[in-house]
Image (cartoon, rainbow, N blue to C red):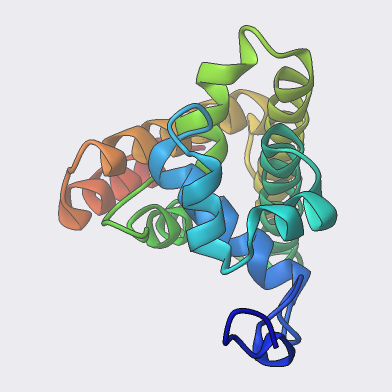
Length: 198
């Protein structure tokens, strides 16, 4: 007891229910909404439910937490592409699935459609931060490889060239979602792209 306050009842350090992945997901969403520079430590603390000392203990500084968020998304995207392997889809069908699946994610966010964390925020940081640039490059390489492999497996006659087009449309859809275009408009672009890929 100090100054009339029962210290045994005061929460200390991380909450007992602390889950690093849940906290990282919450931090990722806050970064996706506000970007790296626009997200303060107080906002990260609010998003994760962790006090600043607990954030530092669990993840390190803000930049380290941001890099972890980029890695987490890259791993998620890698697993998402893997779910399309062996589905015996046509080139059009696999393209449409990739694009429409991405739109579903792009249209979510803390305050509305937020696009892709990497495309929406890491592109701004990559010019001055080699580690962010490397994380973005790894993401793009994984994306390119998966799209080309999936298109080739579906019977594309030009999988490498078509993969570049599909990836470019994926990035454009992210930007357009963040800019407020409707789901209907994004889905129309996705279907038009699927019609053109061979």
